[in-house]
Length: 160
Image 1 (cartoon, rainbow, N blue to C red):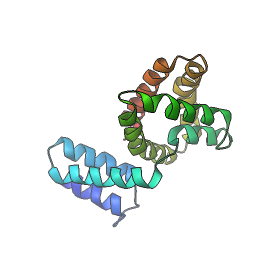
Image 2: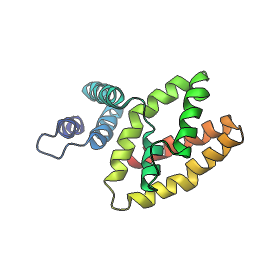
Image 3: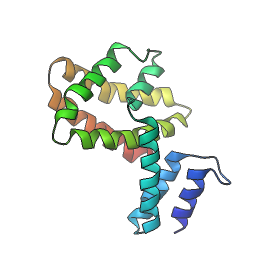
Image 4: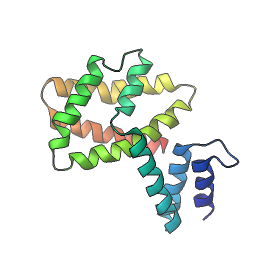
């Protein structure tokens, strides 16, 4: 119950610096321990984040910003075309995109708390996004999807 209560404080910013990322991680841990209120907190937080930030390319945008690229750069345009033109048409595509809209803003928020965020974003580019972009260019969309799923799972585990 203590994790749930602390998560609420982080969610609202009561007595601590407001942090959706910290709140999400604490709610997730409390929910895993069977605290029903924590599940409600997770749902509230994820709904708020997905409504507030729907439509973006959060991780890819943050990586491109770290390289001083614009929001309409080649890379972001290709990733958005992949998402909207191929991924959303897959059986599990809508669910994957919905999950991404929930966790990606929190991941980016957490990465941005690190003094070496540019280094982290560079690693994401090298290990995940550059290979994904190559797969898209080659028309190997399924391989890109697999790499994308691996990226989200890895970053969620590391930062949430």
